[in-house]
Image: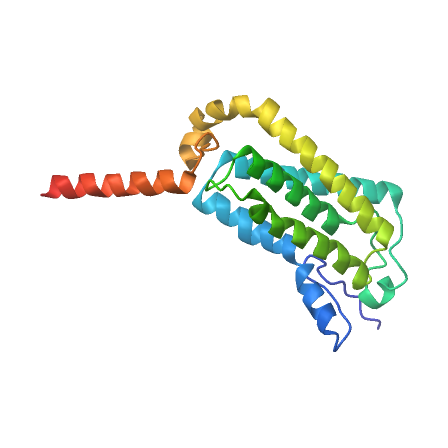
Length: 222
C-alpha cells in the first residue's frame, strides 16, 4: 500500500546546501518576515495596541493576499531548483518574501520621516538602515537559495514598494481621521486601543507619566 505524500509547512521550511555557511545565514534571513509578524506585530498588539502599528500589520496582511491572488492568476513556475526544495507545487511570481520586506521597509521609512514612532531621533538614516538592509538580504536570499528567479524577486520588491507607499497614504490621509472614533468605540475601550502618533517622543512621554504617577502614589501614602 502506497503511503500518502507529505508536504512541509513552507512558512518556516527553508532548505540550504549542506556545508554552505552563507546559505545557512541566508536561510535564517528568509525567516525574517516570520519573526516580524509573530515576534513583532503580535507582541505589539499584546503590549502596546497602537493604531498605527495595527494598521501597519493590516497592510502587510492585505499585501500578502494581493500577492497570493497574483500568483494564482499568473501561475509562473519557480526555477528548476524547486524540485530539490520541494516547492514545485507553488508559484513563484511575484516573490511574497520580497514583497513583504519591501512593503515593511517603505512603510517603516515613511513612518520614521513623518515622526511616527516610539522615540524622536534626528538621525533618521540610522533608524531606517536596518529594515532596508534586511529587505535587500531577503531578496538576495530567495534567489541564492533557489526559491525564486531574479525577475520574481524584483517583481515582489516593486509591488511591495508600491503597496507600502499606497497603504501609508491611505492610513495617514484617509483613515487617520477615524482614529479618535476607534479609540472611543466599544472595541477601543475594551482592548485599550490608542493612537500616540501625535506625541513626538512616546517613550519619554510614558516614562515621565509613569514617574509622575509613582510620585503621586508615594505622596498619598506619606
